[in-house]
Image (cartoon, rainbow, N blue to C red; front, side, top):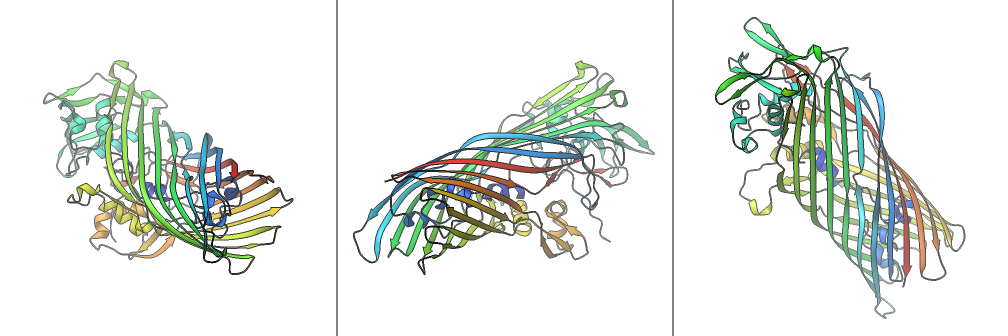
Length: 596
Protein backbone atom coordinates (compact mmCIF):
# COMPACT_ATOMS: atom_id res chain seq x y z
CA UNK A 1 0.00 0.00 0.00
CA UNK A 2 1.32 3.44 -0.81
CA UNK A 3 2.06 5.78 2.07
CA UNK A 4 1.37 9.44 1.34
CA UNK A 5 1.25 12.13 3.98
CA UNK A 6 -0.69 15.36 3.94
CA UNK A 7 1.78 18.12 3.16
CA UNK A 8 2.71 20.70 5.75
CA UNK A 9 0.56 23.79 5.33
CA UNK A 10 -0.51 23.19 1.75
CA UNK A 11 -3.01 26.02 1.38
CA UNK A 12 -2.12 28.65 3.91
CA UNK A 13 1.60 28.75 4.60
CA UNK A 14 3.49 27.15 1.73
CA UNK A 15 3.51 30.37 -0.27
CA UNK A 16 4.62 33.78 0.89
CA UNK A 17 1.10 35.07 0.30
CA UNK A 18 -0.85 36.44 -2.64
CA UNK A 19 -3.89 35.05 -4.38
CA UNK A 20 -2.79 32.46 -6.87
CA UNK A 21 -4.66 29.34 -5.84
CA UNK A 22 -7.27 27.32 -7.68
CA UNK A 23 -10.00 28.72 -5.42
CA UNK A 24 -8.86 32.28 -6.05
CA UNK A 25 -9.01 31.58 -9.78
CA UNK A 26 -12.59 30.33 -9.43
CA UNK A 27 -13.53 33.36 -7.34
CA UNK A 28 -12.06 35.80 -9.87
CA UNK A 29 -13.61 34.03 -12.86
CA UNK A 30 -17.16 33.44 -11.64
CA UNK A 31 -20.12 35.65 -12.57
CA UNK A 32 -23.09 36.68 -10.47
CA UNK A 33 -24.93 39.03 -12.82
CA UNK A 34 -26.62 42.13 -11.43
CA UNK A 35 -27.52 44.51 -14.26
CA UNK A 36 -30.77 46.48 -13.94
CA UNK A 37 -33.70 45.76 -11.65
CA UNK A 38 -35.67 44.38 -14.58
CA UNK A 39 -33.07 41.80 -15.57
CA UNK A 40 -32.35 40.81 -11.96
CA UNK A 41 -36.07 40.51 -11.19
CA UNK A 42 -36.36 38.03 -14.06
CA UNK A 43 -33.44 35.94 -12.82
CA UNK A 44 -31.26 37.34 -15.65
CA UNK A 45 -32.98 34.96 -18.04
CA UNK A 46 -32.62 37.57 -20.78
CA UNK A 47 -30.42 36.05 -23.50
CA UNK A 48 -33.32 36.02 -25.99
CA UNK A 49 -35.09 39.17 -24.74
CA UNK A 50 -32.84 42.23 -24.95
CA UNK A 51 -34.05 45.86 -25.03
CA UNK A 52 -32.69 46.49 -21.52
CA UNK A 53 -29.18 47.71 -20.68
CA UNK A 54 -28.82 44.96 -18.09
CA UNK A 55 -29.01 42.34 -20.85
CA UNK A 56 -25.95 43.57 -22.72
CA UNK A 57 -23.37 41.85 -20.47
CA UNK A 58 -25.10 38.55 -21.22
CA UNK A 59 -26.00 39.07 -24.91
CA UNK A 60 -24.56 42.03 -26.85
CA UNK A 61 -27.49 41.88 -29.29
CA UNK A 62 -29.81 43.14 -26.56
CA UNK A 63 -29.00 46.78 -27.35
CA UNK A 64 -30.36 46.52 -30.91
CA UNK A 65 -33.80 45.22 -29.87
CA UNK A 66 -35.01 48.47 -28.29
CA UNK A 67 -36.51 50.88 -30.81
CA UNK A 68 -35.16 53.90 -28.94
CA UNK A 69 -32.15 55.39 -27.16
CA UNK A 70 -32.09 55.11 -23.38
CA UNK A 71 -30.22 55.94 -20.18
CA UNK A 72 -30.41 53.98 -16.91
CA UNK A 73 -28.87 54.14 -13.47
CA UNK A 74 -29.43 51.49 -10.80
CA UNK A 75 -28.52 52.14 -7.16
CA UNK A 76 -28.94 49.31 -4.72
CA UNK A 77 -27.81 47.54 -1.57
CA UNK A 78 -26.32 44.18 -0.66
CA UNK A 79 -27.18 42.42 2.61
CA UNK A 80 -24.85 39.47 3.21
CA UNK A 81 -25.21 37.13 6.20
CA UNK A 82 -22.92 34.16 6.83
CA UNK A 83 -23.59 31.57 9.52
CA UNK A 84 -20.50 29.66 10.62
CA UNK A 85 -19.82 26.83 13.05
CA UNK A 86 -16.69 25.21 14.43
CA UNK A 87 -15.13 21.76 14.69
CA UNK A 88 -11.90 21.41 16.72
CA UNK A 89 -10.63 18.89 14.17
CA UNK A 90 -11.99 17.87 10.79
CA UNK A 91 -11.77 14.69 8.77
CA UNK A 92 -13.57 14.86 5.43
CA UNK A 93 -13.97 11.09 5.44
CA UNK A 94 -16.16 11.29 8.55
CA UNK A 95 -19.75 11.75 7.37
CA UNK A 96 -20.88 12.36 10.96
CA UNK A 97 -18.47 15.23 11.59
CA UNK A 98 -19.94 17.49 14.28
CA UNK A 99 -19.86 21.29 14.17
CA UNK A 100 -21.00 23.57 17.00
CA UNK A 101 -21.01 27.15 18.24
CA UNK A 102 -22.93 28.72 15.38
CA UNK A 103 -22.31 32.46 14.80
CA UNK A 104 -23.84 34.75 12.17
CA UNK A 105 -21.87 37.70 10.78
CA UNK A 106 -23.36 40.36 8.48
CA UNK A 107 -21.77 42.59 5.85
CA UNK A 108 -23.87 45.22 4.04
CA UNK A 109 -22.89 47.72 1.36
CA UNK A 110 -24.31 50.26 -1.08
CA UNK A 111 -23.77 49.52 -4.78
CA UNK A 112 -24.50 50.94 -8.22
CA UNK A 113 -24.57 47.77 -10.32
CA UNK A 114 -25.69 49.45 -13.54
CA UNK A 115 -25.24 52.76 -15.29
CA UNK A 116 -25.09 53.46 -18.99
CA UNK A 117 -26.76 54.60 -22.18
CA UNK A 118 -27.38 53.55 -25.76
CA UNK A 119 -27.89 55.74 -28.81
CA UNK A 120 -30.00 54.39 -31.65
CA UNK A 121 -29.40 55.60 -35.19
CA UNK A 122 -31.97 54.92 -37.95
CA UNK A 123 -30.64 54.11 -41.42
CA UNK A 124 -33.87 55.05 -43.19
CA UNK A 125 -33.97 51.72 -44.99
CA UNK A 126 -37.20 49.79 -45.34
CA UNK A 127 -35.39 46.43 -45.53
CA UNK A 128 -32.04 45.05 -44.35
CA UNK A 129 -30.14 47.10 -41.79
CA UNK A 130 -32.87 49.32 -40.36
CA UNK A 131 -30.95 50.78 -37.41
CA UNK A 132 -27.80 50.44 -35.39
CA UNK A 133 -27.01 51.19 -31.78
CA UNK A 134 -23.95 52.44 -29.94
CA UNK A 135 -23.77 51.94 -26.18
CA UNK A 136 -21.53 52.53 -23.16
CA UNK A 137 -22.56 50.53 -20.12
CA UNK A 138 -21.17 49.44 -16.75
CA UNK A 139 -22.76 46.30 -15.29
CA UNK A 140 -21.70 44.56 -12.07
CA UNK A 141 -20.99 40.87 -12.60
CA UNK A 142 -19.87 39.81 -9.11
CA UNK A 143 -19.92 41.03 -5.52
CA UNK A 144 -17.43 39.84 -2.89
CA UNK A 145 -18.95 41.28 0.29
CA UNK A 146 -18.83 38.66 3.06
CA UNK A 147 -17.86 38.33 6.70
CA UNK A 148 -17.27 35.04 8.54
CA UNK A 149 -16.64 34.47 12.23
CA UNK A 150 -16.32 31.25 14.22
CA UNK A 151 -14.78 30.15 17.48
CA UNK A 152 -14.40 27.12 19.68
CA UNK A 153 -12.19 25.18 22.05
CA UNK A 154 -9.44 22.96 20.69
CA UNK A 155 -9.50 20.12 23.18
CA UNK A 156 -11.49 17.15 24.32
CA UNK A 157 -11.50 14.22 21.92
CA UNK A 158 -8.50 13.64 19.67
CA UNK A 159 -5.08 15.23 19.57
CA UNK A 160 -4.68 18.90 20.43
CA UNK A 161 -3.38 21.19 17.71
CA UNK A 162 -2.32 24.81 17.40
CA UNK A 163 -1.52 27.34 14.70
CA UNK A 164 1.83 27.81 16.43
CA UNK A 165 2.68 24.15 15.92
CA UNK A 166 1.61 24.36 12.28
CA UNK A 167 3.87 27.40 11.77
CA UNK A 168 6.74 25.59 13.49
CA UNK A 169 6.34 22.69 11.09
CA UNK A 170 6.30 25.17 8.22
CA UNK A 171 9.59 26.65 9.46
CA UNK A 172 11.10 23.17 9.31
CA UNK A 173 10.61 23.23 5.53
CA UNK A 174 10.41 26.97 5.02
CA UNK A 175 13.30 27.55 2.64
CA UNK A 176 12.02 27.77 -0.93
CA UNK A 177 15.13 25.85 -1.98
CA UNK A 178 14.53 23.07 0.54
CA UNK A 179 15.48 22.60 4.18
CA UNK A 180 14.41 24.49 7.26
CA UNK A 181 14.48 28.21 7.97
CA UNK A 182 17.88 29.51 9.08
CA UNK A 183 17.63 30.20 12.86
CA UNK A 184 19.96 33.21 12.43
CA UNK A 185 17.61 34.90 9.94
CA UNK A 186 16.48 37.52 12.48
CA UNK A 187 20.05 38.83 12.64
CA UNK A 188 19.72 40.04 9.05
CA UNK A 189 19.06 43.71 8.43
CA UNK A 190 15.98 42.81 6.36
CA UNK A 191 14.81 39.29 7.34
CA UNK A 192 11.83 39.48 4.99
CA UNK A 193 14.17 39.81 2.03
CA UNK A 194 15.47 36.32 2.75
CA UNK A 195 14.18 33.37 0.77
CA UNK A 196 11.71 32.18 3.40
CA UNK A 197 7.96 31.98 3.84
CA UNK A 198 6.70 35.00 5.71
CA UNK A 199 4.23 33.32 8.08
CA UNK A 200 6.77 31.26 10.09
CA UNK A 201 9.25 34.13 9.82
CA UNK A 202 6.78 36.53 11.48
CA UNK A 203 5.91 33.87 14.06
CA UNK A 204 9.61 33.44 14.87
CA UNK A 205 10.11 37.19 15.13
CA UNK A 206 7.25 37.52 17.63
CA UNK A 207 8.26 34.55 19.77
CA UNK A 208 5.24 32.48 18.71
CA UNK A 209 7.69 29.81 17.59
CA UNK A 210 11.16 29.14 19.03
CA UNK A 211 14.27 27.30 17.91
CA UNK A 212 15.93 24.55 19.94
CA UNK A 213 19.46 23.90 18.61
CA UNK A 214 19.98 20.77 20.74
CA UNK A 215 17.26 18.55 19.27
CA UNK A 216 18.35 15.60 17.14
CA UNK A 217 15.69 14.95 14.50
CA UNK A 218 14.67 11.56 13.19
CA UNK A 219 16.66 12.12 9.99
CA UNK A 220 19.82 12.89 11.96
CA UNK A 221 19.71 16.64 11.47
CA UNK A 222 20.15 18.93 14.45
CA UNK A 223 17.85 21.75 15.52
CA UNK A 224 14.09 22.05 15.61
CA UNK A 225 11.38 24.70 15.66
CA UNK A 226 8.53 24.41 18.12
CA UNK A 227 5.62 26.60 19.18
CA UNK A 228 5.43 28.63 22.36
CA UNK A 229 2.28 26.66 23.19
CA UNK A 230 3.94 23.25 22.71
CA UNK A 231 5.60 21.10 25.36
CA UNK A 232 8.77 19.02 25.04
CA UNK A 233 8.59 15.21 25.16
CA UNK A 234 11.74 13.05 25.30
CA UNK A 235 11.60 9.55 23.80
CA UNK A 236 15.01 7.95 24.04
CA UNK A 237 17.39 10.01 21.94
CA UNK A 238 14.54 11.87 20.26
CA UNK A 239 12.73 15.03 21.36
CA UNK A 240 9.17 15.73 20.25
CA UNK A 241 6.69 18.51 20.92
CA UNK A 242 2.96 18.43 21.61
CA UNK A 243 0.20 20.85 22.69
CA UNK A 244 -0.27 20.23 26.44
CA UNK A 245 -3.60 21.94 27.11
CA UNK A 246 -6.79 23.26 25.60
CA UNK A 247 -6.94 26.49 23.61
CA UNK A 248 -9.65 29.01 22.86
CA UNK A 249 -9.47 29.58 19.12
CA UNK A 250 -11.30 32.08 16.93
CA UNK A 251 -11.22 32.77 13.21
CA UNK A 252 -12.60 35.70 11.25
CA UNK A 253 -12.51 36.55 7.55
CA UNK A 254 -13.79 39.64 5.75
CA UNK A 255 -13.90 40.20 2.00
CA UNK A 256 -15.01 43.28 0.09
CA UNK A 257 -15.08 44.43 -3.51
CA UNK A 258 -16.78 43.74 -6.80
CA UNK A 259 -16.26 42.93 -10.47
CA UNK A 260 -17.70 45.22 -13.16
CA UNK A 261 -17.85 45.07 -16.94
CA UNK A 262 -17.24 48.45 -18.59
CA UNK A 263 -18.53 47.81 -22.08
CA UNK A 264 -18.56 49.48 -25.46
CA UNK A 265 -21.37 47.92 -27.48
CA UNK A 266 -22.49 48.06 -31.10
CA UNK A 267 -25.80 46.46 -32.13
CA UNK A 268 -27.53 46.03 -35.49
CA UNK A 269 -31.22 45.61 -36.28
CA UNK A 270 -31.87 43.64 -39.47
CA UNK A 271 -35.47 43.57 -40.68
CA UNK A 272 -36.80 43.93 -37.12
CA UNK A 273 -36.44 40.18 -36.56
CA UNK A 274 -32.70 39.52 -36.44
CA UNK A 275 -30.43 41.42 -34.08
CA UNK A 276 -26.70 41.09 -33.73
CA UNK A 277 -24.31 42.76 -31.30
CA UNK A 278 -20.66 42.98 -30.39
CA UNK A 279 -19.08 43.94 -27.06
CA UNK A 280 -15.59 45.07 -26.27
CA UNK A 281 -15.38 45.06 -22.49
CA UNK A 282 -12.86 46.09 -19.87
CA UNK A 283 -13.73 44.12 -16.73
CA UNK A 284 -12.34 45.61 -13.52
CA UNK A 285 -11.90 43.93 -10.16
CA UNK A 286 -11.33 45.48 -6.76
CA UNK A 287 -10.90 42.98 -3.96
CA UNK A 288 -9.92 43.23 -0.29
CA UNK A 289 -9.51 40.28 2.04
CA UNK A 290 -8.67 40.37 5.76
CA UNK A 291 -8.11 37.39 8.02
CA UNK A 292 -7.47 37.12 11.75
CA UNK A 293 -6.89 34.06 13.91
CA UNK A 294 -6.41 34.02 17.67
CA UNK A 295 -5.57 31.18 20.02
CA UNK A 296 -5.41 31.67 23.79
CA UNK A 297 -4.69 29.29 26.65
CA UNK A 298 -7.76 28.23 28.62
CA UNK A 299 -5.39 27.84 31.59
CA UNK A 300 -2.04 29.46 30.87
CA UNK A 301 -0.42 27.43 33.67
CA UNK A 302 -0.62 24.43 31.34
CA UNK A 303 1.73 26.19 28.90
CA UNK A 304 5.15 26.77 30.51
CA UNK A 305 7.69 28.08 28.06
CA UNK A 306 11.35 29.07 28.09
CA UNK A 307 11.96 31.04 24.89
CA UNK A 308 14.93 29.75 22.90
CA UNK A 309 16.43 31.51 19.91
CA UNK A 310 19.66 32.26 18.09
CA UNK A 311 21.26 35.70 18.28
CA UNK A 312 24.72 36.91 17.28
CA UNK A 313 25.80 33.35 16.61
CA UNK A 314 24.81 31.94 19.98
CA UNK A 315 21.93 30.16 21.65
CA UNK A 316 19.94 32.38 24.02
CA UNK A 317 17.28 31.32 26.52
CA UNK A 318 14.73 33.84 27.77
CA UNK A 319 13.25 33.90 31.24
CA UNK A 320 10.77 31.10 32.01
CA UNK A 321 7.15 32.22 31.65
CA UNK A 322 3.77 30.98 30.43
CA UNK A 323 2.12 31.30 27.02
CA UNK A 324 -1.16 33.24 27.14
CA UNK A 325 -2.24 33.99 23.55
CA UNK A 326 -1.19 34.78 19.99
CA UNK A 327 -2.86 36.60 17.12
CA UNK A 328 -2.21 36.17 13.41
CA UNK A 329 -3.40 38.78 10.90
CA UNK A 330 -3.26 38.89 7.11
CA UNK A 331 -4.48 41.62 4.76
CA UNK A 332 -4.63 41.37 0.98
CA UNK A 333 -5.67 43.96 -1.61
CA UNK A 334 -5.81 43.60 -5.36
CA UNK A 335 -6.96 45.56 -8.36
CA UNK A 336 -7.29 44.19 -11.86
CA UNK A 337 -8.28 45.25 -15.34
CA UNK A 338 -8.72 43.04 -18.36
CA UNK A 339 -10.19 42.84 -21.81
CA UNK A 340 -12.62 40.50 -23.54
CA UNK A 341 -14.94 40.44 -26.50
CA UNK A 342 -18.42 39.00 -26.99
CA UNK A 343 -20.69 38.30 -29.94
CA UNK A 344 -24.41 37.55 -29.80
CA UNK A 345 -27.66 37.42 -31.73
CA UNK A 346 -31.40 37.41 -31.13
CA UNK A 347 -33.73 35.96 -33.77
CA UNK A 348 -37.53 36.12 -33.98
CA UNK A 349 -38.55 33.16 -36.19
CA UNK A 350 -42.19 33.98 -35.42
CA UNK A 351 -43.92 36.98 -33.93
CA UNK A 352 -43.93 35.49 -30.42
CA UNK A 353 -40.94 33.12 -30.35
CA UNK A 354 -37.47 34.51 -29.62
CA UNK A 355 -34.13 32.68 -29.77
CA UNK A 356 -30.81 34.07 -28.61
CA UNK A 357 -27.19 33.03 -28.13
CA UNK A 358 -23.85 34.61 -27.32
CA UNK A 359 -20.24 33.71 -26.70
CA UNK A 360 -17.70 35.62 -24.63
CA UNK A 361 -13.97 35.11 -24.88
CA UNK A 362 -11.83 34.48 -21.81
CA UNK A 363 -10.78 37.69 -20.11
CA UNK A 364 -7.07 38.50 -20.08
CA UNK A 365 -6.47 40.24 -16.74
CA UNK A 366 -3.44 42.01 -15.32
CA UNK A 367 -3.63 41.87 -11.53
CA UNK A 368 -1.74 44.05 -9.10
CA UNK A 369 -1.76 42.80 -5.54
CA UNK A 370 -0.41 43.90 -2.16
CA UNK A 371 -0.35 42.01 1.11
CA UNK A 372 1.14 41.96 4.57
CA UNK A 373 0.98 39.88 7.74
CA UNK A 374 1.50 40.36 11.45
CA UNK A 375 1.90 38.07 14.45
CA UNK A 376 1.51 39.18 18.08
CA UNK A 377 2.40 36.88 20.98
CA UNK A 378 1.56 37.44 24.64
CA UNK A 379 2.98 35.77 27.76
CA UNK A 380 2.24 35.80 31.47
CA UNK A 381 5.43 37.86 31.82
CA UNK A 382 4.56 40.79 29.57
CA UNK A 383 8.22 41.68 29.12
CA UNK A 384 8.48 38.58 26.92
CA UNK A 385 5.68 39.73 24.59
CA UNK A 386 6.65 39.88 20.95
CA UNK A 387 5.37 41.58 17.80
CA UNK A 388 6.37 41.07 14.20
CA UNK A 389 5.01 42.98 11.19
CA UNK A 390 5.99 42.21 7.64
CA UNK A 391 6.60 44.90 5.05
CA UNK A 392 3.94 45.36 2.38
CA UNK A 393 4.66 43.01 -0.51
CA UNK A 394 3.65 43.71 -4.09
CA UNK A 395 3.23 41.50 -7.10
CA UNK A 396 1.89 41.70 -10.65
CA UNK A 397 0.75 38.73 -12.68
CA UNK A 398 -1.68 37.81 -15.43
CA UNK A 399 -4.79 35.67 -15.25
CA UNK A 400 -7.00 34.14 -17.93
CA UNK A 401 -10.64 33.62 -16.94
CA UNK A 402 -13.14 31.05 -18.29
CA UNK A 403 -14.99 31.58 -21.55
CA UNK A 404 -18.78 31.79 -21.49
CA UNK A 405 -21.51 30.49 -23.81
CA UNK A 406 -25.17 31.52 -23.40
CA UNK A 407 -28.30 30.28 -25.14
CA UNK A 408 -31.88 31.34 -24.52
CA UNK A 409 -35.46 30.91 -25.66
CA UNK A 410 -38.38 33.17 -24.84
CA UNK A 411 -42.05 33.34 -25.74
CA UNK A 412 -44.13 36.49 -25.59
CA UNK A 413 -47.87 36.40 -24.99
CA UNK A 414 -48.81 39.56 -26.85
CA UNK A 415 -49.09 42.42 -24.40
CA UNK A 416 -49.71 40.07 -21.45
CA UNK A 417 -46.08 39.22 -20.73
CA UNK A 418 -43.37 36.68 -21.47
CA UNK A 419 -41.58 33.55 -20.28
CA UNK A 420 -37.85 33.05 -20.77
CA UNK A 421 -35.34 30.24 -20.16
CA UNK A 422 -31.53 30.52 -20.42
CA UNK A 423 -28.65 28.08 -20.31
CA UNK A 424 -25.06 29.19 -19.64
CA UNK A 425 -21.80 27.23 -19.74
CA UNK A 426 -18.48 28.39 -18.27
CA UNK A 427 -15.30 26.38 -18.78
CA UNK A 428 -13.03 26.83 -15.74
CA UNK A 429 -10.42 24.34 -16.93
CA UNK A 430 -8.91 27.01 -19.20
CA UNK A 431 -8.07 29.31 -16.28
CA UNK A 432 -4.39 30.14 -16.18
CA UNK A 433 -1.98 32.28 -14.18
CA UNK A 434 1.17 33.58 -15.84
CA UNK A 435 3.98 36.06 -15.50
CA UNK A 436 3.44 39.50 -17.06
CA UNK A 437 3.85 39.48 -20.83
CA UNK A 438 7.07 41.48 -20.53
CA UNK A 439 8.61 38.57 -18.62
CA UNK A 440 8.15 35.84 -21.20
CA UNK A 441 11.50 34.17 -20.62
CA UNK A 442 10.93 33.42 -16.94
CA UNK A 443 10.26 29.90 -15.70
CA UNK A 444 6.68 28.68 -15.38
CA UNK A 445 6.14 30.10 -11.89
CA UNK A 446 2.50 29.01 -11.83
CA UNK A 447 2.82 25.48 -13.18
CA UNK A 448 1.61 23.96 -9.90
CA UNK A 449 -1.63 25.94 -9.60
CA UNK A 450 -2.32 25.83 -13.35
CA UNK A 451 -2.05 22.06 -13.24
CA UNK A 452 -4.63 21.96 -10.43
CA UNK A 453 -6.88 24.32 -12.42
CA UNK A 454 -6.81 22.00 -15.40
CA UNK A 455 -7.39 18.79 -13.48
CA UNK A 456 -9.81 19.85 -10.75
CA UNK A 457 -11.86 22.56 -12.46
CA UNK A 458 -14.38 21.73 -15.14
CA UNK A 459 -17.47 23.36 -16.55
CA UNK A 460 -20.39 24.95 -14.76
CA UNK A 461 -23.96 24.77 -16.00
CA UNK A 462 -26.43 27.53 -15.20
CA UNK A 463 -30.16 27.46 -15.81
CA UNK A 464 -32.06 30.73 -15.52
CA UNK A 465 -35.85 31.05 -15.70
CA UNK A 466 -37.72 34.33 -15.78
CA UNK A 467 -41.28 35.58 -16.25
CA UNK A 468 -42.92 38.97 -16.67
CA UNK A 469 -46.64 39.74 -16.44
CA UNK A 470 -48.09 43.09 -17.46
CA UNK A 471 -50.95 43.61 -15.02
CA UNK A 472 -51.75 47.02 -16.55
CA UNK A 473 -50.24 48.96 -19.46
CA UNK A 474 -48.00 50.69 -16.91
CA UNK A 475 -47.28 48.03 -14.25
CA UNK A 476 -45.38 44.72 -14.64
CA UNK A 477 -44.68 41.94 -12.15
CA UNK A 478 -41.57 39.75 -12.50
CA UNK A 479 -40.07 36.60 -11.01
CA UNK A 480 -36.94 34.55 -11.64
CA UNK A 481 -34.89 31.55 -10.60
CA UNK A 482 -31.22 30.72 -11.13
CA UNK A 483 -29.33 27.46 -10.59
CA UNK A 484 -25.54 27.18 -11.07
CA UNK A 485 -23.46 24.04 -10.57
CA UNK A 486 -20.04 23.88 -8.92
CA UNK A 487 -16.95 23.79 -11.19
CA UNK A 488 -14.81 21.77 -8.77
CA UNK A 489 -14.38 18.07 -9.39
CA UNK A 490 -12.74 15.21 -7.53
CA UNK A 491 -11.44 11.79 -8.54
CA UNK A 492 -10.65 8.36 -7.29
CA UNK A 493 -7.15 7.20 -8.18
CA UNK A 494 -5.85 3.90 -9.50
CA UNK A 495 -5.27 2.67 -5.94
CA UNK A 496 -8.77 3.53 -4.73
CA UNK A 497 -7.99 6.75 -2.84
CA UNK A 498 -10.28 9.76 -2.87
CA UNK A 499 -8.38 12.68 -4.47
CA UNK A 500 -9.36 16.33 -4.33
CA UNK A 501 -7.27 19.36 -5.28
CA UNK A 502 -5.72 19.69 -1.81
CA UNK A 503 -4.75 16.01 -1.63
CA UNK A 504 -3.29 16.04 -5.14
CA UNK A 505 -1.36 19.21 -4.35
CA UNK A 506 -0.05 17.68 -1.13
CA UNK A 507 1.27 14.71 -3.11
CA UNK A 508 2.00 16.55 -6.33
CA UNK A 509 5.29 14.88 -7.24
CA UNK A 510 3.89 11.42 -6.50
CA UNK A 511 1.05 11.84 -9.02
CA UNK A 512 2.99 13.85 -11.58
CA UNK A 513 5.70 11.17 -11.66
CA UNK A 514 3.17 8.41 -12.30
CA UNK A 515 2.82 6.97 -8.81
CA UNK A 516 -0.92 6.68 -9.47
CA UNK A 517 -3.34 8.03 -12.04
CA UNK A 518 -6.71 9.73 -11.70
CA UNK A 519 -9.99 8.26 -12.88
CA UNK A 520 -13.75 8.64 -12.49
CA UNK A 521 -14.11 12.44 -12.15
CA UNK A 522 -17.09 13.54 -10.06
CA UNK A 523 -18.35 17.10 -9.75
CA UNK A 524 -19.13 18.44 -6.29
CA UNK A 525 -22.87 18.64 -5.72
CA UNK A 526 -22.90 22.16 -4.31
CA UNK A 527 -25.00 24.47 -6.48
CA UNK A 528 -25.70 28.16 -6.02
CA UNK A 529 -29.40 29.02 -6.16
CA UNK A 530 -31.16 32.35 -6.29
CA UNK A 531 -34.78 33.50 -6.28
CA UNK A 532 -35.90 36.93 -7.41
CA UNK A 533 -38.97 39.08 -7.86
CA UNK A 534 -39.58 42.54 -9.21
CA UNK A 535 -41.95 45.32 -10.03
CA UNK A 536 -41.81 47.61 -13.05
CA UNK A 537 -43.40 50.94 -13.94
CA UNK A 538 -43.43 52.43 -17.43
CA UNK A 539 -44.94 55.88 -17.96
CA UNK A 540 -46.67 57.07 -21.10
CA UNK A 541 -43.68 59.37 -21.59
CA UNK A 542 -39.98 58.63 -21.45
CA UNK A 543 -39.54 57.72 -17.77
CA UNK A 544 -39.55 54.17 -16.40
CA UNK A 545 -38.56 52.63 -13.08
CA UNK A 546 -38.04 49.10 -11.81
CA UNK A 547 -37.43 47.46 -8.45
CA UNK A 548 -36.11 43.97 -7.71
CA UNK A 549 -35.21 41.74 -4.78
CA UNK A 550 -33.01 38.67 -5.07
CA UNK A 551 -32.11 36.07 -2.46
CA UNK A 552 -29.06 33.92 -3.18
CA UNK A 553 -28.17 30.82 -1.19
CA UNK A 554 -24.61 29.53 -1.44
CA UNK A 555 -23.55 25.97 -0.61
CA UNK A 556 -21.83 25.33 2.69
CA UNK A 557 -18.06 25.62 2.55
CA UNK A 558 -15.34 24.33 4.85
CA UNK A 559 -11.97 25.91 5.51
CA UNK A 560 -9.23 25.42 8.06
CA UNK A 561 -7.62 28.46 9.74
CA UNK A 562 -4.33 26.56 9.61
CA UNK A 563 -3.35 23.38 7.87
CA UNK A 564 -2.99 19.81 8.94
CA UNK A 565 0.59 19.00 9.89
CA UNK A 566 2.58 15.88 10.76
CA UNK A 567 3.10 14.77 14.35
CA UNK A 568 6.81 14.01 14.47
CA UNK A 569 6.50 11.14 16.98
CA UNK A 570 4.62 8.77 14.70
CA UNK A 571 4.04 10.58 11.39
CA UNK A 572 0.29 10.54 11.92
CA UNK A 573 -1.54 13.59 10.52
CA UNK A 574 -2.60 16.16 13.12
CA UNK A 575 -6.06 17.23 11.94
CA UNK A 576 -6.60 20.98 12.13
CA UNK A 577 -9.84 22.73 13.13
CA UNK A 578 -12.46 23.49 10.53
CA UNK A 579 -14.99 26.26 10.00
CA UNK A 580 -18.18 25.44 8.11
CA UNK A 581 -19.90 28.50 6.63
CA UNK A 582 -23.27 28.99 4.97
CA UNK A 583 -23.77 32.30 3.13
CA UNK A 584 -27.02 33.98 2.12
CA UNK A 585 -27.25 37.28 0.25
CA UNK A 586 -30.18 39.60 -0.42
CA UNK A 587 -29.78 42.18 -3.20
CA UNK A 588 -32.16 45.12 -3.59
CA UNK A 589 -31.95 47.16 -6.80
CA UNK A 590 -33.89 50.24 -7.98
CA UNK A 591 -33.50 51.31 -11.62
CA UNK A 592 -34.39 54.74 -13.02
CA UNK A 593 -34.49 55.09 -16.79
CA UNK A 594 -35.36 57.49 -19.59
CA UNK A 595 -36.09 56.73 -23.24
CA UNK A 596 -35.33 59.29 -25.90
